[in-house]
Length: 102
Image 1 (spheres, rainbow, N blue to C red):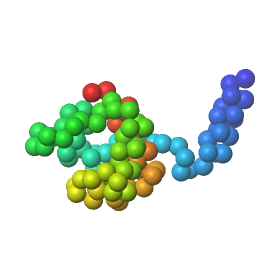
Image 2: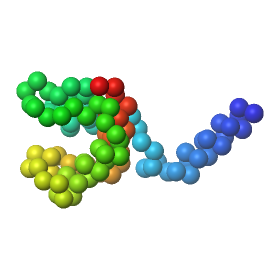
Image 3: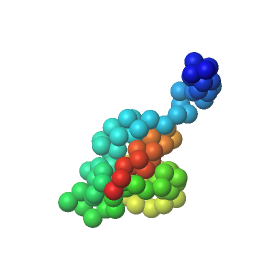
């Protein structure tokens, strides 16, 4: 029975394709490299008064980052940073920050 459930779950992951699933590990690495300098992980950086992102709703984060990337939401800093992010990276970052308890 367990083997059957495993095969069903595995089949679902394969059908979703490699670009569909979010990765908390990838999100953690990207957030650490791109976001954490200003936003921190749980708390904002001591040097910058930017809001912490830990525990935020992932859909809100995805929407906000995509708006910055597409320049429909204005911030010179965020437009430049988000401009280099792919949809997959945005999903990973949002999933990671949503998983972090503030």
